[in-house]
Image 1 (cartoon, rainbow, N blue to C red):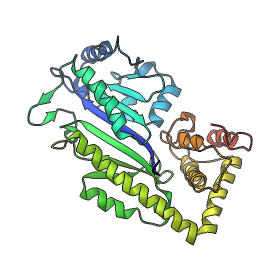
Image 2 (image 1 turned 120 degrees about the horizontal axis):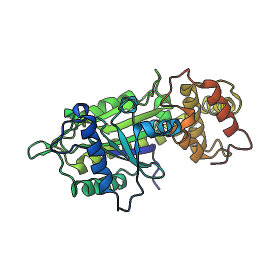
Image 3 (image 1 turned 180 degrees about the vertical axis):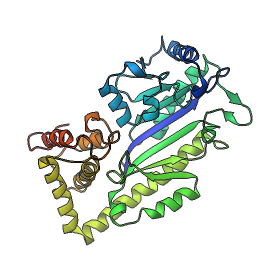
Image 4 (image 1 turned 45 degrees about the vertical axis):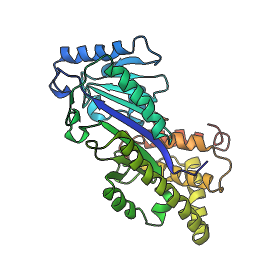
Length: 329
């Protein structure tokens, strides 16, 4: 299997219903009608969706959805909002967010596969509901940027070696030229978290779904190739400094009493790099990736400010990276 720097993939499809105002102008009664319309489409389907009004979710469920970047702070305060999601929360449909419907599918390094799932859900909805559509513009959305296909595809890449060699700026220029957005993952901090960067399409009108997917995959593949080449340079030129940074990070996570989310992500990034380069053999890679991609919501990496919850975060992570637990998933 070809080496990849992609750590997470996400496909979003935004839609609105014909005959209704955009969500920010809906009455509570209209919002409820839309919720029920969307829910009824899946009442007898193969999807194990459950409906949740935003004010019915527990704090841990809200944290998980925010950590996985399936909703944001604006949706949290939306009294008319609701969600349909499956049991493992890899598929989530936001109802009455920025648009009436936002289909979201998340996974690992498989945009084409995720798009197939999202498109199937979209087709199911469109067979029962009338979408707002213009023959010249395409699907109509609240934000003009999303008009057209309403499709946004995103790869999150882990590129610590490119970052350490100070070559990241090259890709801002390349991305801009091909109509792709390339930016660091910040959460609520002031620094890029864990050498993670997002690649997503910027243009949805006048481009086919296939073209959008291809443009994001193209730069993702190029970044992956460059990242693994850069690792060899680091290994040959900065071997001791690299090893020191990797093992120092492991020591911090196994002993820290206080840790911010930005420091945690920096250490996780170095440990992931160390595992993949063969320096660390007793830490489970899947565990590290799960932490970095929001599958452990109590760490609050994306949803919390840098100084929040740092004692509780350190206590949890210290247990997970103890000698007894570090190789467990």
